[in-house]
Length: 105
Image 1 (cartoon, rainbow, N blue to C red):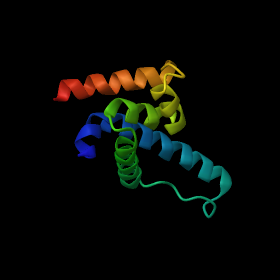
Image 2 (tube, helix red, strand yellow; image 1 turned 45 degrees about the vertical axis):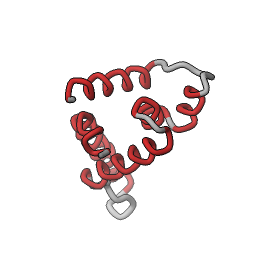
Image 3 (cartoon, rainbow, N blue to C red; image 1 turned 90 degrees about the vertical axis):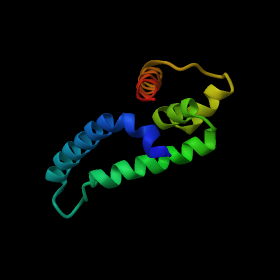
Image 4 (cartoon, one colour; image 1 turned 120 degrees about the horizontal axis):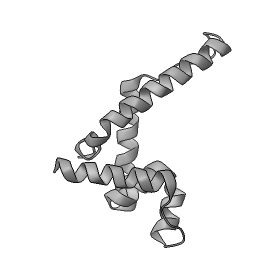
């Protein structure tokens, strides 16, 4: 189940949701109350889980799905073909999530 595979990422998802809410609130204050609707954290997390589930189906494994989730599907396809290497944020993200996944099993 995708939820258990991504459960280790809940803390990052909550932090991301808080950042999105804060950023969105700041933007809404500048843009005006009728201009923008802020995301609902539960819907944001649910959408992320659904998206990750699709990436798992598309790429057939957790590592490539994580690469696609963080770096985008195009980057994951190039990585899978050996045309690029993991670097920076994506490399660190994949290592961190895989490490946490191993400790929860």
